[in-house]
Length: 418
Image 1 (cartoon, one colour):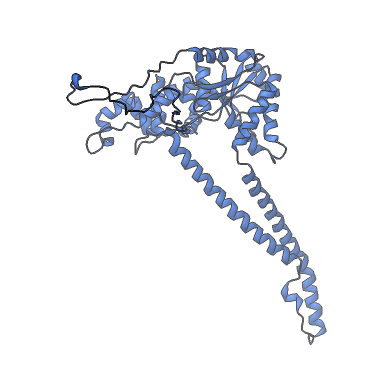
Image 2: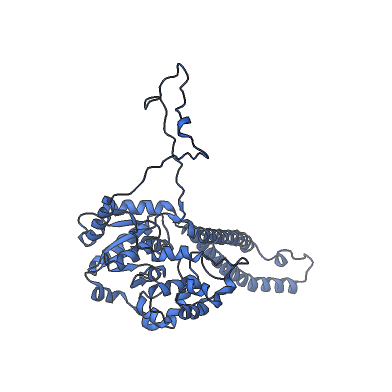
């Protein structure tokens, strides 16, 4: 999830990013702290491993930890928290898209298996035209048919075997893709490994990359490692992308040069530009793409100013109401509240002690919860007539031990409306 249009912008702005090969990690980042987006790394390792039978995808995290230690880098991992209602539509769309892809993959597997069986049958038997030979055929004709059969049979076998090998490869690949689906149990197992190995990890209130960006922005960590451009939208001064990728060069992307390239002086302008260009949150205005979004935000300075101008009249409803969906995305990207719901940092991980101390201080802050009061409103109250209702004769006085049990609270939904 992120802002897809920023990938194209970065191609036009080489000053906003720099490639950092493995051999340069120790030189540039020794003594620094890295926050890894655990879900992003999990998807990468699951897709990288040929099999997950021996928990290779989990072992990759330990190899990553060891690799960082050799470079003098301390690492911790961020996990996603609760899903927000604001992203519900986008999550549903992605789930449906993945289900369609899995259905197509299953159809391919069935088709490959059918063709595979047919080819195996053809290889085991001679061509039909060579099986039946008339008994009355002249000697020369029989010899000619035998010669053609001898020449054609190896060629047929070779072509069939080549196709057979191709089909087997495709069948194996489709099966691997089905097995590479990231399951919720993987994260449970990974956290247990982290506890056993003493690797610090944290759970965000909502998105892992947003919490990591907040911690870096407030100086509690040095670098966030993720593939999501939301890190920049949430205010991280830079982030590491394509880390440990075998297909793309890992690079460090900087926010300030990117904003200068787009012509923005305030981070809030960059946030509004990304919202209009398209994010995982609602708020995109119809007919506005990245080019027009850049032009309009440079001209007006914000979405609110745009909607209040003549350029924004076309986005108003028939009764003159202005769109308000973009405010949800603005609150998510610009929220400055402490972003962690749980922290598991062992005492030995002194590099992240500031995060642990900040979390503990957050827990000690008093929460102002006013008691719920039941208010009864009367149209024309007459105080003299307000008398306590008489208790029926013989009925016991109700006390705390009367057997009344409190109502069981409803189970909270995982979808949090913001």
